[in-house]
Each structure stands twice: as C-alpha cells, then as structure tokens.
Image 1 (cartoon, each protein chain N blue to C red):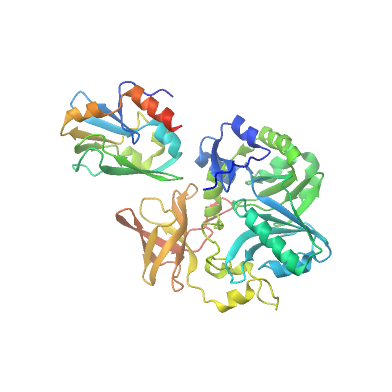
Image 2: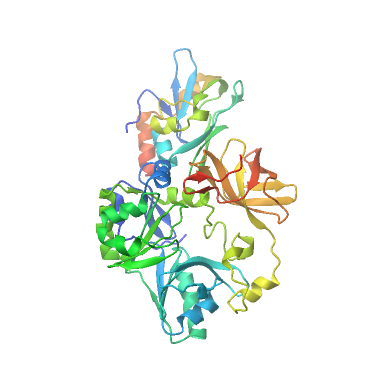
Length: 365
Length: 128
C-alpha cells in the first residue's frame, strides 16, 4: 500500500457533509456509501442516483495524427467514431496482449480525442501513452486533465433529472444516442454509464462540480457510493479492472472479445501478442442456487475442470448472489458448478450475463 | 449510539446477555453492523452443537464482506433466531434486538472475562 496522502475530488466536502462513509479507492478518498448501499442501488434501478467519478482521469490527445495514433494504441478501432461526441469502449494492451487498462475514448474533433481511464491505473496509463506517443507520433500533445470533474447520473429518471436541474442542457443532450456525447455550455454530457441503466456521465470543470451536484440533489437525485456502483456494474455484467481483468489476461480471456477489432488488418499494440496466445479460460456468469455470497478469489469446480471467481456479490435486484468467474473454455450456460465457501461446497449455475438490464432480471427461470 | 450497559462484549464485536434462565443470548454489536454495512446473509450455528469460548460458530455477510462470529462463552446452542435467515437487515435496524443464537453456558464464570460497556466503548474508540 502506498503511504502518499489520498487524493480528494472537488466534491470531497460535499460527501463529508452528506455523511458519506469514505474509503481508499485507487489512491482516492471516495464515498463507499451515504448510509445504505442497498438503498442507493435500488434508487438507481428505480429512479435516479449520482456518483462522483472524478477520481477517473481524462487524458486529452491533440494533434492532426491523433486518430491514426489511437488506431495503433487501442484494441478497439476509433475508425468507428464518425460523429463528434461519439464514444468507444476499448482495452489498452501490452505488446503481449495483456490488459493495461480499460477505457472510454471520446471523439471530440478530428484533432482532439479524450480518453477516460481508471483511477488506480492512471499514472501507469499516462506513462505508457506518453512512451507510445514519443515513439509513434511525437507531435501529439498528451494532456492529463486533473482540472476536470466527472459526475455520473444514472437510472430511468436520470436524464429528466439533469434537464430539471439544468434546463439549458436539454437541447444539446435530448437526442443523444447511447455512447454519444455533446457539449452543453461548460458541461460535456455523454449517454454512458456503469450501471446498466439509462443516464449520463458528465465531464465538467472542477469548479462547476459543486453547483451541479447540489442542483441534482435538489432535483431529487440520490448520492450513491462505490458500494452501489460495484453491485450495479456487476449486475450489468460489466468488468472491473484489477478484478475481472489485469495485465496477466487478454481481452479474449476476460469476456471482452467484442471490444477487439480484428476484422480489418490493423497493426494495433498487442495484436501480435493476442494472436500468438491460445485463451486459457473464459469469463462466465454465475448465479448461486444455494444460500450465501459469492466473492472474488473463491475456487470452483466444473465438470470440465477448476475455475475461480473474479467478482462476486449479493445482487440487491435479484435477491441472490451473482458472480463473474474464470471457467474452462468448454463450460456452457446451464451447467452446474460447485463453489468452495469456507468449509462448504455450494451449487451455482453458469449463466449468460448481464444479469440485469434496465431494471429487469435476465436470469433463466 | 450508546453501548448498552446491561450487556457484555467480546473483542470480536459480539454482545452477550445473561438471561434469568441462565442461558446467554448472543448477537453482533451496533458498531460491528455499522462497519460491515448492509447485511445480506446470516449463517447461524446448528441447534444442539457445542462450542468452546472463542470458537467460530457462524458468519454474517454484508454486501461488502464476510465476518466470522465467535462464541463469547463455551456452551451448547439452545436456540437460533430463524427470522434472520430471511431478514438479515434486522441486525442493521437494531443490532441489540436482533439476537442470533442462545447458548447454555458450560462455565457461566466465563462471562466475567468479557468486556463491560465501558471497556467495549474504549475498544471501539481505539479502533476508530
């Protein structure tokens, strides 16, 4: 553990004032919950909640060669980003195909892209990107944007809540498709998120964060912590860097093959490494059929061999425990596995994930 | 939240209450539930089973973490609170009302080795 002081976002004092239980996350002192993480979870599924996600780092890349550079840097292909404001989820790979981080790339202008990366990996990512820039496109400017804050507003009522709190954002954000963003005054509003619900992620100058947070609070949006963020993303089948993936695995082993653009010949960093490796396992969804709670690092047995849970929790929406797990490639949905929890062996079923989408269970009966 | 003075406490955050019939009722403290967050699963000991003082005899799990429950005194399990298997959140709502199980102590003198309210208060302040 690092002994350097924890980072604090522009909203830190708001969290303290709201009675948040704070925790160290990726070197940042962030809200875990504001009382009950299960209540916060339900509010996002049923109405609207907001998350301070300013610990994530926005990195701006500027210059004429930026699109070409990102086609080398990222496993997904930014050639898909045609409309300004469009976003793309991608892995950042090592040469050997291991995952350095997962991120969202925004196409803002032909000479301006923005990457949003995880907090715990931000320094490593920045060093990697600068090293690749120096090698491949030395004229590009790489700017970490710690002057920006980020607020995610999520849930079926999230968009209407923002328009209520900030009517001037409605015209710019009303017609946004999923994974599309637009500038609305000082705010950049994108229809993205990490909950499996509709909503926005808003990138804005740090000095604007407190007024917007307070306006959203007044509009009835409930503040939510990292606890609810984790149960929501896991129900939505979204991976967490450092748990479901890391440098030791490839996107093909982490359920992220859909994010790797291999169709066209494109020489992105990690492609040769990926193509020379045979996947060792796959990421699968699990539902616990017995009572208990699945957790990361629990071992499991399938008829095809052993496996291990990478993320597990109690699902507030489903009322049972769900998990993501590394299982043998031969495993199929519908098969039973045994999970070792303390001295017991519990029955779980392999299922397709996401487990929950737009407030509804996707589990087989 | 005050620490009830009528109860005894362990360093592992169980509370214990000596009943008029000589049995000892066991639960987890308000401080323990607060640290764990929303509870979602309670695994009580099996009725009739005996435990030594300090032995693992159950588990409570929150969304965040699992935490073992240790027998505050040696004895046999004479009752369990079944309500908690369907409604573990009752511990969050009132940790001192939502008891987990009762023991028939094999050595009632062991209760004297537990912390009193003032001692437990000092313990949680030192952990803060």
